[in-house]
Image (cartoon, rainbow, N blue to C red):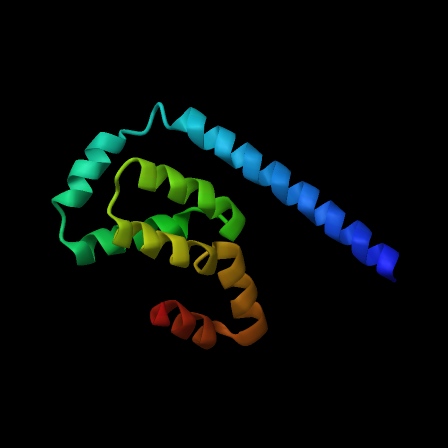
Length: 120
């Protein structure tokens, strides 16, 4: 049993490390095409509530787990997006993942899933 646990741990650690490095690499490649300056200016001039809604929407459409969200957050912070908006994305992204919401709806029902979504 301890051997299975160690093998499982090492397997997950390797998979998550590869995922983290791969997503970080892809984000650095995509960074050349993303107009961060335009986004920064738009978000600075936008109402904080509306900017937070944009972050929530972005968190919903990006299928990232918490491990994959960190490189995105680092890039947003490096590009001087407001800290509060980045934190909205950081906390909402893993929770609003469509896969997790679907699983939660199947297991606990749509009512609980919608309630959980509104409480975030």
